Length: 197
Image 1 (tube, rainbow, N blue to C red):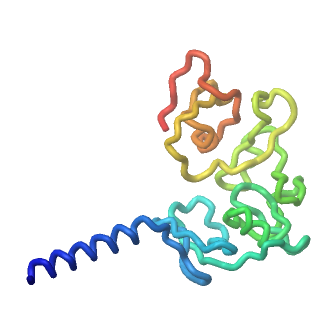
Image 2: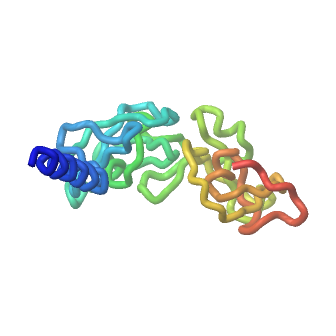
Image 3: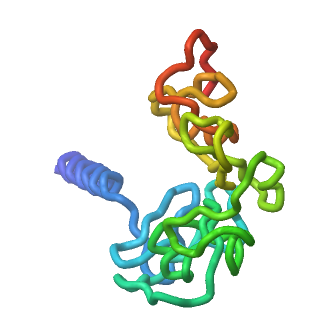
């Protein structure tokens, strides 16, 4: 009888453990989110990270409530992606970390859809760490100017080759951006060695 009870108890614990592992971990308002466990916030909330921590891997933040509709105006904030947002609400809704208060650059616009900091070379983006001058796909800087954009932090291992303006094939577009190279074309570069991912 005792062995049946122990078996039932062990089975119950195993079932509970498997159920809890299959459910996504959710934070609550004011609770920790992000981090190495990639904790998510419930619907209607976003993970707010400490300002200026753009290239910190596994950074933890705090779950905060975000309204469905953000105000039209407010103090502008610069996202770690190089985009100026009209206010912190827009930044949080976009799921972007905050680089600093105020607009990202002197030359850009201010909507959440507009990247700032017009550039001709990577040195034009030197005022912001982790950015490079990205040109319109396929132009490689031959026509017009580019925009300063964030290189990124972490990439997936997805294999979807792209050709960079350095004539090297990258395993995916994120890897290309991480290298700070503009996009020449989708697919592998003609007769090039594939870059490690």
